[in-house]
Length: 214
Ligand SMILES: Cc1ncc(COP(=O)(O)OP(=O)(O)O)c(N)n1
Ligand SMILES: Cc1nc(C(=O)O)sc1CCOP(=O)(O)O
Ligand SMILES: [Mg+2]
Image (cartoon, rainbow, N blue to C red):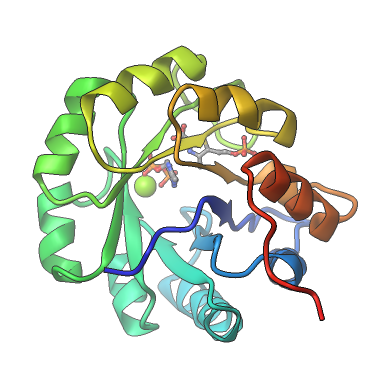
């Protein structure tokens, strides 16, 4: 199974955002610590998801970064991504594991210890845990669980916990102190004036230096 990076960049395909430009900027300063999760809007076609994921695999591979695909595991397989991520409305974790095979990276969303334990038993390689803080990026989420909520999941499981939801470089230390292995961000990079610089700041907060730039 591939090693898991600590900075997860989730693509932002909302109108006005440029996910490829953001990924390029992040890859310029981050190497194997970067995981790019290809996440498209629910009303995007499979062809759109496939085209975006294929382009991102092509960008990630030479940089040593990892590409995962959110929700659409057939797209992950079709583009030879390293794996996928599923949540409560997607394929169950055990089914996702069967689809992806034993060697793939499989992330699962868990907001509490019981869900986390089930996900790990069913084959999750890592957990996405949140929302840690309020976010405007996604609607319909429950109340933020904060670093304390992350800590409750960390104590229950032995797989890496990736904190998500309202994460900024300033908030990373509290999440690491709670036991998070890494963080996942959308707006902190897609909305940044300088996404390369924002990537450097997130990596520094994670205690990582990223890839050499020369
Ligand atoms: C790292 C990470 N954590 C959580 C999620 C959320 O997944 P899910 O609950 O399935 O919601 P959608 O992203 O599919 O809307 C994630 N994608 N990544
Ligand atoms: C896609 C997603 N899932 C979440 C969850 O808690 O399950 S929070 C989220 C969006 C995170 O965006 P930002 O970094 O801009 O807050
Ligand atoms: Mg999902």
